[in-house]
Length: 317
Image 1: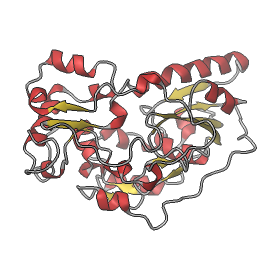
Image 2: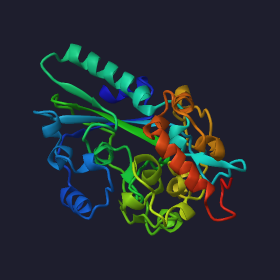
Image 3: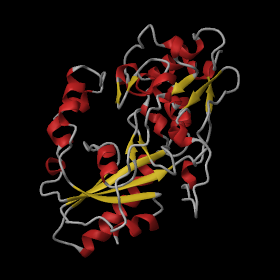
Image 4: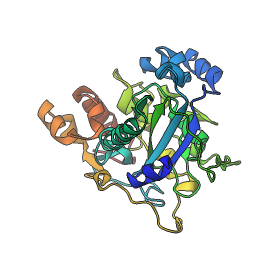
């Protein structure tokens, strides 16, 4: 069984869904028209491919979706206070780069399936491919898309990476696979806690999001944003920290293992030191980590924003 193979490869979650077009095409196009993707031009490039898996892989029939846990249930609940003069690093970037960790196993799965089905095609995807991963993951029973737009599993929470395999092989979901109902209910904790008001129900204005501003924005930071940074140097976890589905809870049975490569190397960095980084310093600190997404200029900009926060906020230098 495909799902069992994925579990054997160490993925915490796995499921199968048809390679259907996105049901949120109109919403996505409106989101782009309103400029809520900020400067992430690749999101607006050929949206038809992003919305229709058959354009990504001609003849696509099925998608295998997997989730890789990187923080155990309860491990990411509540705000952290870094040492004085430090800026916080989002939990997803504290260990090895998830692209590298996941792709190796997904490529191994594809290779095995090609040997068994030589007439079929398989394409592994981890974040960089134009695929609506959260929507397909929800279809594959991995959880529901929360109001903060992240996928939430009812037992494991939301601290997991998504990956998938698009294939021309027709696959049936396992008999016990079911889509998860939306359990957000009337809760608005993620919306209320966002310091930049980037979140509205089931939508995020990326141009206001701290994660976008520190990781994806290649230009200068909007003047109004540094004061709302709340000590985040790279990324942001606030909407997940306040989510009740990440609160401590017994996962029941045998909780899934977390790949040791995701173990945190550091949770924060000294702001003044980052402002003085050289290319070599950045390369050393970001080696084999998702933190390499930010250029040296961006790191210095982020550190300056943290240092210039209003008094009393975390990470004051």
